[in-house]
Image (cartoon, rainbow, N blue to C red; front, top):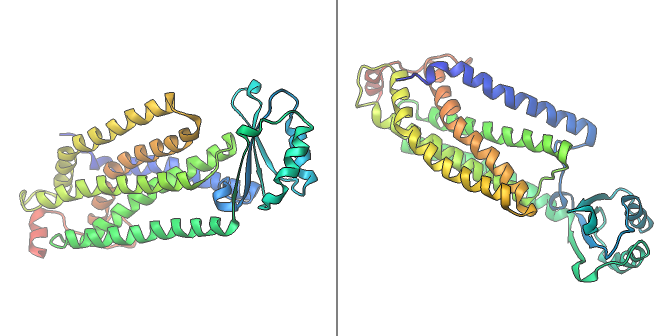
Length: 319
């Protein structure tokens, strides 16, 4: 049986090769744009105008001039679809919908506007701040609840809190991977963080912790069954006994997400792509981060923390 946890230092190094560049990208984005990510209207507040012209004539410079004439010279303009669709999305920083008619009149001077497909969405900056606070609170409370649950469920296992901490560490690993990818795509592709991104992150958190708990629970069951075996051997056996379940569950989800990415609409592709990357990271971290981290902790390989036990007999003595 291949010893998975024996190669744990390589897994930690592989994780670092993704997380550290992601952190560097977020720092670069912060220095260059003022934020680690491109934030959508859900967080910044403002108005989004979706426009469709009946014929050519509207250009990015022309649209920018229209919005500058009503008081916003820092709008974000993006052409949607093919060039001959004449569709544009404009995000403005103001919230005053009373200027909408004035904007439409000025836009009509560039090219005839299809008013049936015209749409404006306005979000207050206060709402954006509340969304941010709620998202951070959800992750923090979720981490505390998960740790508490694992400590209670694993109370008969020595150092039960270590299982909770390792599960949270794997969760943070996945969040950092997703954030790094989102920051990179924000710089390269103009992707913005919105409410759907938060939904994807919370979904990834749930899947990541669930996979870690499945393996941890099998370790808890195997400890009294294999007295005298090294802890690393018990953990390795537990991984192999549960890995097929984790992979089967995740592969089904991956196939569905790949199909949506290939054939789905543009509005959900960003959400699905982030979800796919997050679940891929979660599948990896539950096996190659959470469990190896637990073994490293138990064997005293982590700095500033104590040593655990090395055999199942030692564990039983502590129960």
